[in-house]
Every structure is written in C-alpha cells, then in structure tokens.
Length: 193
Image 1 (cartoon, rainbow, N blue to C red):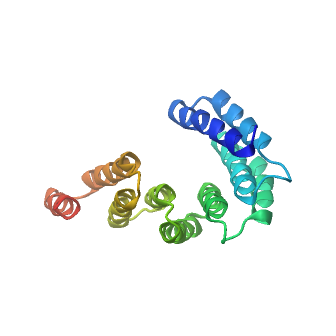
Image 2: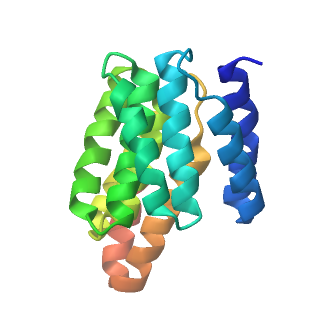
C-alpha cells in the first residue's frame, strides 16, 4: 500500500476521533501515519505523516512525545512543497499554543493563512484562520478571522464553510457574553450585511 493511501485511510479515524474524543481512534490514526513514514516516501507524504503523528500525540496530552516527530518533519520540509510545509506549520503553531506561546502561534497561523491562499490550499487556510480564532483573546480579531475563514472556504473549489461558520458562531457567542446589546447589533450587521 502506498504511503499516500495509508494517510488517506488514517484521515477518517482522525476525524472520528476528534469528534468522539476516543483515544483508541487517535492511537490507530497515529499508527497509520507512522506506517506511512519511510525514507522512500515523497517529502509531502513524509512531512505530513510525521507532523500528524506529532498532532496525535498532542491530542492525547503527550506534547513531549510529539516533538521528535516535528523535528523529523522539519528536516525534510520545504516551502517549495506546500502540502508538507503547511501541515508542519499548522502543527508547530498548535504546539506553540499548547506549550504557552500563544502570540507566536497566532503569528504563525496568520502567516500560514496567507501561504495557504497563495498555494490554493483553501481548506488549510480555513484551518489557519480557525486557529487564529482559537488563540486570539480579542473578540473583534476573532470575528475578522472567522470571516477570513469563510472567505477562504468560498474561494476554494470545494468550500467547507461548516468549520468557518462554527468558528464565527463561537466568536459571536463570546461577543454576546461580553458586549452590550447595541454593540452586538452593529457586530452582527458587519458580519451579515
């Protein structure tokens, strides 16, 4: 089985695991990604698989166990190979966020958003915008980046507005809890002209 097929097979387990929070699914996804890693694997496959193993470790609260995988990914990553580079940058940002460096993570996610749009990686641009929303404490910035995620979804050939919409809904919910009613009305009008 090709490394790309192994990664494709791991993706449903990752999605299901993220939805259900079942550690067993995360462990199976981690094993599938690890099987895709070989010296012969194309850089895009190798880098993404290593980064995803690191991500699976972070989802099971094993940040330290994920760090060697990020180092392996970084050795073969190149800006000229957008799939691997963007996946690595996303996971690096997540690790920065989870280890107490939210500002560095925020900056990385913002740069990643632009990089992904430049390389027509719209779903990854949506992810980057989503993570800016997660790391930002500024409600207006959360709303702006939620909107940017929606814009990336609309620009893509296969829009996936659900994640962007959920991020936007989360930002609006946070505004609802902290702003006066008049401010909410003007924010809602700005977001939904």
